[in-house]
Length: 438
Image (cartoon, rainbow, N blue to C red; front, side, top):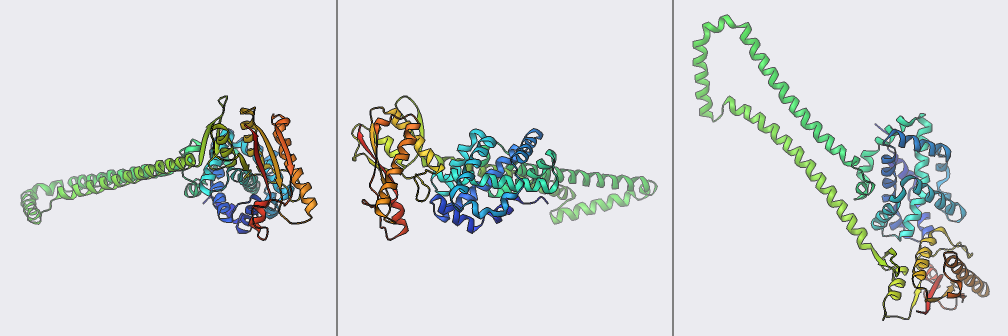
C-alpha cells in the first residue's frame, strides 16, 4: 500500500500550527482549520496531475532538487507560522512556487479554499503559499528516502489518488481539468462487469464441457438407456411444471442475476458521476456567490469579495448618488508588530485600490492611521502616521498620483473598539480612507 502523504501532512500541521497560523492571518482557528483541510488535498491533487507524465515528474524532481526540498522544513514547522520574517519569507517563497507549479489555476484554487473556509481571500492565499513548501518538502523527503526517479515519483503520486479523492473539496477535479480521481470508480465498475461476464462465460464453458464428456464416455450405454432417460426427462418436466420451476428458469435466473449485478454497478457509477457533477456545480455557485464582478471605467473587470473594502469603495465611486460620506476602513491590511512595514498579504488589497483610483483619476482620498492605546501615546501617533505613509507609498508605486493622496496619523485618539479587549484593540489598529474629492 502506498504511503498516505495526506495523513502525514495532517499530522505535521496539527492544532498547535493551526493556532499559530490563525493568529498570523488574523482569522479564527475554526476557519483556518477548514482552510487547511481544503488546501492539503488541493495541493496534492495539483501535484498528482503535474506528475502524471514522465516529463511532469521529471520537472518536479528538478524543482525538489534545485529548491533543496529534502524534508528539512519538517523539522521545525511551528516556527514558520509564528509571524515575523520566517512567516513572511515562507509566504513569498510559497507564492512563487504556486505560480510555477499551477500557473493560472492558482486563483481558482484560492477561491475554492476561500469559499470552503470562510476566510478572507488574502488569508487563503497566504495560507496556501505557506503550506506549499511544506507539501513539497514532504514529497522530497519520500523521494530522498526511496531514491525515487521520475517513474518512482509518478508511482508515489498516483498512489495518493484514493486518499485525495476522499478529502478533496467539491469542484477541485473540474478546476484542475482532470478526471483521474473519478476514473478509479469507472475502472472498478468496468473491472467488476468484466469479471462477472468472464465468470458467466467460464461457467457456461465448464457446463458444456462436462456435458460433452459425459456424452463421449457413455456413448454406448446411452443408446441402451435412451428410453429410460426420455421417461425420466418427462417426469422431471412434470415435476418442474408442478413446482413452477424448470431448468430454463434456473438458467434465466443466473442470467438475470448477472444482469442485475451489472445494472447495479452501472447505476452506482452513474450516481457517483451525478454526485460529482452536482458537487462541482455547488462549489462553483458558492464561489460565484462570494464575489462581485465590477467593471471599472476603461473596461477593466475586478473580481472582488462581496462586502470587502474594495467592493464598497468601488461601488461608492461608481454610483452617482451613493449613500454615505465616503469613509471606509481597510479590512485586510497587516503590518509587522510595532512597525510600519506592510505584510505580504496586504498587497492584493492595495493592488485593487490602485486600480480603482486610476480608473477614477479625479478622485482624491485621505488616509488616516490609527493604533490601540497600548504603549506611549506620542509613539503611537508617530507609528500611525508612518503606517498611513507606507500605504500612500505603495499606492504611488502602483501609479497613483501622490498629489491625490493625503496621509495623517492620530494614534489612539479615535477608537472604534474597546481597548480593554484584544478584539477591540485589533479593531482600533486600522487605516481609514476618506474620499475628499469625487
